[in-house]
Image (cartoon, rainbow, N blue to C red; front, side):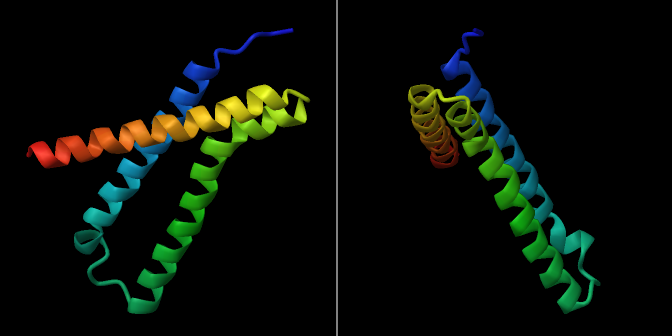
Length: 103
């Protein structure tokens, strides 16, 4: 049976969420220049579609590992990884806030 480093796996999942959120924020921040001439209906459609895709990607990154462990009958690992994911995301959010406040 393979042993998993839950702390590392949860860190990488949370880092993936952070990188993805930064990418979406970059796109949205520069969207006015890129999509300035787009019709209103299409711009709103794109924004909502991006929101749904973002929800799917980030939920897979946060909940995918714990669900996989749960389906493998490893409930303790599943719960531990879920809480580790949430903890890493909180730490990263505080890190981002710290950078913002120090500017």
